[in-house]
Length: 461
Image (cartoon, rainbow, N blue to C red; front, side):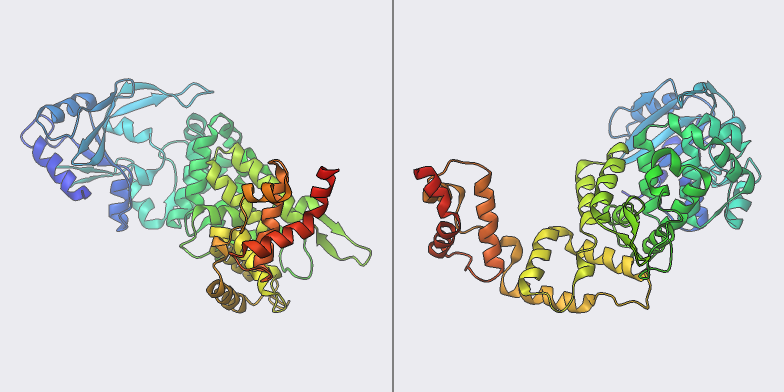
């Protein structure tokens, strides 16, 4: 159901009631409408009074899908109208204990409610019945026009009370291309340490949203300069200022930011994370040889370990961690391609990359676009054609060992164990090298007996 219809139902249901002219849309839905870029913001309605009573009223007159979910301590309620979620909020003031994000709540006026909100651009209210816009701070509309992120009150107090808002400031800046006002920016630097009281899950969610904007690199750079990145992913900071070799024009950090900027808008979260972390292992593996040449041996493996540690710390889902770690560990494979590769080598790349092959190629494109253009680079067009050719001949993803585990155990008269997997992988490799047909059990048995005949002799003895 679209939001306009939901709002129409709400408007008509409260007409000629005590709530007429007292309900205001607030927050992102108003901001985005004024910007002309409707997003996926929830519908938030604020009123002076008890929002839980409004929720019960709407339920009693039969316009909500089910009984409202109420949160009396916060003076809020959640209702559903034909499948659309609407949050009803009592205008309130908040006060915080130093080490908690859980505020003490008191019912208050709209003016007081506005002052507790994060940024002026999110303080605008729109009367549900008249359409009138309220700009109580006097800065909301002008900050939207001029592209400014600022807090409605002293930013030092705002971020002391709720440190998550520092991350939100950077996210909104990246999302809309707005500038963080100087006093607000300085307050973020001063209060960066306060991020320690925020749960890793909340930090992760804001971080992910930043990465999904078209200005992800700008957001990450601002996290660095404000000191926020040091609070939850200091490993990334180690890339800053680390000089590279002749294959690069920039230090590791700048190269990474430019690679992020090169990703297509369609890049998903895992690919963006992999691009951010693909060279995180370089600082710990940097070496200089006797000819003063810089090397980063095995940085992809060290980088994968670091990536796993950071993403696990931030409580990313296991499937995301596995995929990102794999992309980081494999990020050099595509770039190593040259025309001398055999078809078997191309097949191994396809098989090892699995469903992440396209993401791996996209990561390589971004990586190479941020490198030294004067140096030789992989021919991705040629690789694409090779991949297409070998896939036509045999679908690498469907290759299986012609012999199953039981057949191998009977053939060699051995018990179940890790050797079975080793033999299966050997047979799969023989198929990819085109030395064995996919369904040729007889030839597969000959190869296994030849390769592992000593296994039988040892057992017989």
